[in-house]
Image (tube, rainbow, N blue to C red; front, top):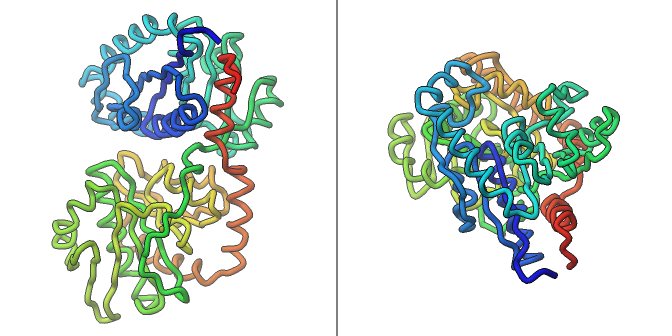
Amino acid sequence: MSSSPKRILFISNGHGEDNHSSYVIETLLELYPDLDISAMPIVGEGNAYRRLNVPIIGPTQNMPSGGFSYINRWRFLTDLQAGLIGLAWQQLKAVWQYAPTCDLIMATGDTVSQGFAYSTGYPYVSFISCLSSLYEGKLYIGPFIGRFLRSPKCLAVVTRDPYTAQDLKKQGITKAKFGGIPSLDKLIPTGKDLHLKSDLPMVALLPGSRLPEAVRNFKLQLNLILEIIKVMPPNQIQFRAALVPKVMEQLDEIAISEGWQNSEGKLTYKSGEGIAEVECYSDAFSDILHNCTLMLGMAGLAVDQGVALGKPVIQVPGEGPQFTYEFAEAQTRLIGLCAQTIGTGPATPETLRQAAKKVVETVNNQDYLAACKEEGQNRFGPPGASVRIANLLLNYMGVEL
């Protein structure tokens, strides 16, 4: 082994991609603590890396679109006005300067991150975590990303699901390998007491993580609950919300604005149908997912994680920028039978009434719930992605454990 530690650079273009990479980094450091790891998050501040104290080699900045300019081209214009091109150029120069000192580069994401890695001329591994053949049955490989993935400098193309790896091999990319979704490895229940009644179905509320959108989504879900209890009495169903800390901090204001009461994270609403209750947590995501019967999902990765556990999701589109009808519809194609999307635009009162009926119908459909358990495993493959990907990277760096 050489006297200097092996060095790897992670490039990612999105918050979800940062998270995927951070879980791989945690596993890498468990397997090989001497590794020298740095990162270049292209979108946002790279908080997932910063939490692990991973050095960031170039400038970062939050853009108005939050990284979702591909959904709405108008948002792309706002990013341009905020200095997107100048920022990207500075980031690219930082990558070019740093790459020659690395033993390997890991690019997580789509065309942008892969293009950054390709442009260095140094060996890299592509983790196309946001791309899947499950959307259309066959992954369209455009001219740019096709060039990046087929480059001799691209040592492996890692996919998020087994089907995509098989599809890419059929398309001639023989170095495609199933990796999986690293965050699934962290979905271990902590034993948090959720105060559940074991004989009642539990609905998980997943409004997303990005503010202010997550707050708007959560308010919409509270209104949906009021429609649900008109169809199914509140003493026959229970609700738990998995919120990020910044949404938890606003619970008092949210409750007041929607006519609910908040008492230490427990929201209540008195109506003619009885008292609706929602217990909210910022530290029980895994426990809520494992124990729920059904998800009300207005998120991306969190919903994928639940589906991988075999949980169905009902999606009601919001105003965005992330969770719009276009996003929900794409998510439905990715997830398959486990997802049901209600409405074709930002939710209306009628959308919520239809969604409420669908929730009640779903929690009482045992055959469907059983089918979702099987489907989740089939679509996302077995857990262990962090270890599979970490071992692959160490192998390409010539590390023997």
